[in-house]
Length: 327
Image (cartoon, rainbow, N blue to C red; front, side, top):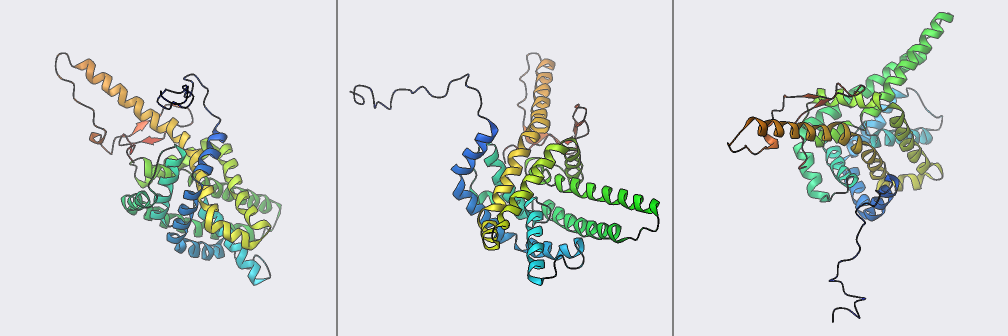
């Protein structure tokens, strides 16, 4: 007799999940993944911080251009504030060691789409596969960060001699700050696209700019959420803030960003690629009569071929058919 009068018979099929059951709310899925993978998030955080230590030093140095002069009269407080600001730019991620960020993003992207990832091997392989492009991105970002710092300080310190100059300076400051915010938003998309699609540097920045502007309000909400989480971690205790940054803050913010970004990339890029592939397959089958239809291979697409989206706000996004879905 299987089980006890059938009550503990595990060979019987259970009710399972109803076929027509509505999907869970995204916020519920987010917390389910986060708590289920909690210890992995800690491991990822430690691993990323170890490889990203040069970026932390660089971003604290870079804040000297963004905030010229002392932020606080107390040297210790001044250094702490620069450290916190640097942590925010690392988590966004604006200033980072590119290859480490690529590996870090790959794992978090897989978690965001509820797929498995081997922490060390996937981190290492993705960092290696995207080493050149990610390193170029990190160098570009650091130089742009320094440039923004110089420009912002120039417009905020430039003396206004009359009312016209006051309004001109106010307009210039607004434009520069808006551009800096958009540039921050772009980095929520750059690394997820880097490890998901075969795009060149120009295409990565171009697509990221389109997404940053087209999704400005939700992007701003996610950006503010990440900044608030970072500030809250340091609000009650510096020690607690540093401890959280070492163990969980970076991976939590990174997961928030990837959990938000991946559905957007799926809707406007991945699904469009699949739709185009299906259309191509249909055309191939319709053009052949009794001949054997050739099997479609994703890696046979040319890297230079770009597909234009037809949506009103996203019609200029570059999509390369060589979508790295296997990654």
